[in-house]
Length: 197
Length: 294
Image (cartoon, rainbow over all chains, first blue to last red; front, side, top):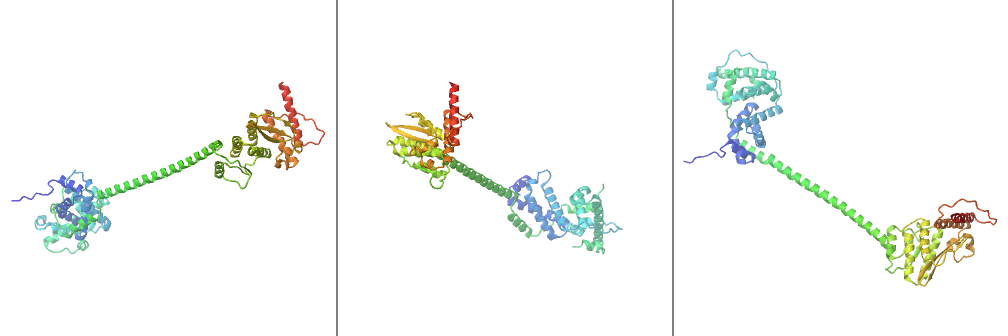
């Protein structure tokens, strides 16, 4: 029985190979983290084509700035941070993502157990992608990446108050969407139109 | 702070979510990697370019330094050659030298031409270096005597004297003094002083050059026209008087009377020139000094 060993057994070897600009190591990194990082870019950018462009730019940055990786955290975490930064740069360049929409009060909370059991990650990515750029960015940074409002304000250049308000609006919109998916009919309000891409 | 259920749902589901990129994304990434040079490659290229630039700068600096050095050395060698020529010019006694003395001839030759002429043995006294008339007279007489002399050694010496006077433009007094020194060192006969006539003559006897320096006042020049150079003879009496006075002064300086005293001069009844009277006054002062010394 043949045992297939991964080419780079340890992360440090992989990083060392990347520092030597080995094409095989670059390919390994792309194959190992490409899917995850594509999901990250998709969450932030909101459409697949742009997300792929950002993904490629992010990997270029990873390979070019590999010397900046000091090994303090995991390599994957560093690559993810690079991808997030690249996505934010893309948004800053191409999107006006500070728009604020009027918030509808949520009357009925969605059933989260049903959502957890029935909604796939692709569905949730699609729901996040439908959010306006500002809401999406703050929600991604706060709820998924784990940044606080001060960090978000520093990263995005908005105030902490704006970050908080945008987060609450993003939550409200997502709850509406989950609830509408749960009940099986589309929400007929302006947010759906605005977030629809 | 408690996490919102919607945040928790999305965090749990999306944290490890994967979305496969399109199949051509890898080829696009590889083409980007191949087209854009990586930082290490860029660094290598930059280092190479810096090295090339530094090497070229060093080469240019070395080339310019050597160029300057060669120019300086060429200048110094030419200067030393010139100085050697100048210093060696009087020692050309071994080379057969044609004794030609050109006084005040043609256009002014440059320094180089003069040096070349000296090398060839021709002494050129230019218009610029033309000396006052008594000196010219001396030179003419010396040259004439030199050509008449049978011994080449004497002739060479005379030529040397002329060459020295032509190369180094000195004040007239010094030249005359030098000539007079030469004359007095080989003096056979004592200096005969005839008032108011200037003439220089040389006698050669028993292969020994004897220079007799006779200084006359201009008034007696008419009595001895043979001894006078033509140029001096053809000059106006006023000019001749002034020159004679000047020459007398020089002679007085030679005798040691640096400053002629303004002793009252006895007024002569005959119509003498002013310079003649001055000369006599000087002579008188000299006599007074001599008596005072005694």
